Image 1: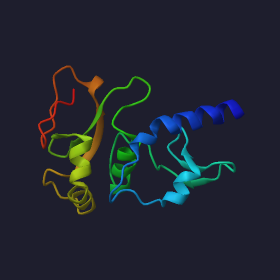
Image 2: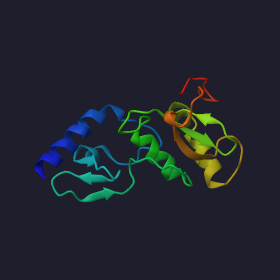
Image 3: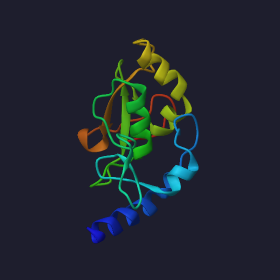
Image 4: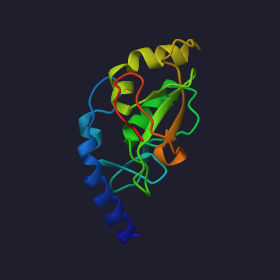
Length: 145
């Protein structure tokens, strides 16, 4: 068990560069110092292993809520294992990068909450290994795959 916890702590330190800030970050910094992500995506407290919040940082293939979008953002844009780059797909078939969704998070969550097909309603998370052709972000023009 201690080897597993050492691995998880090492993984947490490797992923700590993700420290995003902004409207999707709702856990205070004191809690974050004493916590780490589990493989299931839960935020757990060091020492007691008590779950602070479930689905805090995990990928959701089908997205139905703003909380799922924020959870995907916290998990990062590369899938593990494999390191494949992930991107969001909207209801009208557009591809959006993680940077675009972070920048327009308010529009994305509003569209999901109100079930509006305005080009911002994210419905799915996809990875670059699911396509053979190049994919570009429809908002920033950045090549995703």
